[in-house]
Length: 431
Image (cartoon, rainbow, N blue to C red):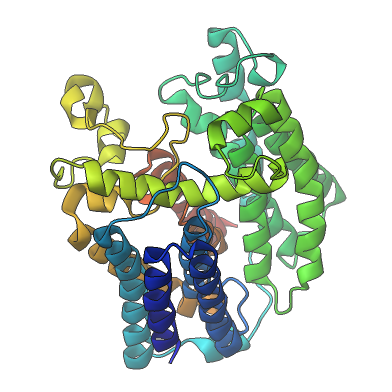
């Protein structure tokens, strides 16, 4: 029933867009996104159910893009519409097939239990990861000769604040708040006031680093991971807590925007909104969602040929250093409608590599991974499993933003989480 409602709304949205009824087209898809999320939440009572999050983000983001509030927006090709629908349908159907053949895991979710692991390994992970991040940040600042937060009049100061290989260690601090959530959640996590105070202090330091880097995304991502980790560990989560966190995050986001020299005039000149009176606090988040779908359409219409996996394997070329020996591996151009707006969607590289088949295959693979994590959520014996769940939830919730799974930093986080999970298993046996 959920998919039927979506397909009917999607067909109607497509027709409305073709007749230039953009507002109605967009609102219909936003309503469909809310319906798909509600269906999964109603059955599972899981606020961060992975299929629900993906449906809300992917379809809702497309609905915002269909509103076409910017002059940069154009009518999408039929192939673009087909790919957007294929991504949701492939994910939703594969997830549903696994639910009906292997079980839903909903009963396991209902049997809530407090995770009671040993907090000591997690505490040392908090200490080690924060120390590594601070040292890496200090090294970048010393070599490059500046700290982005202290630079004025340079909108792209953060994008240039990178030392090859070192920056991955600098931004690893985003995992620390989630580790702290795990530490305090464990039954014995409150046994030492000194350790608790140290964990809180290191968490604050880990959040200061993205601020000094003037990275709005890394700061918001760190908070989002911690929030999702917390929700995954709770039997009941009050939405008001999320609202409080949002109120605390917004001022920091605004400060970082100012620190990056992104004033209202600069942003309005880039976003080219049809309404000149649109408030910037609406324009900015809208464009960071909507324009990514337009960039996908730009790529579909301009792409001369597919790269057959080479673009999607960028993390392999980067992490192994092969990109320095074979520059042609990363020489594929990016197709966007404006050079300043380079954020993409989750399926951009999948289409770049293999066309609509790549979009479908990626959606199906992600659905299988999401299903395994959802049914195992209440059975995880390693606390780092909750951090893994939070990461995948964040990537799916931000599916409109960028090509997460052909992004080197994403794989660095996943590998680092896996190594910490192994370290926890080894350490827990010794204690």
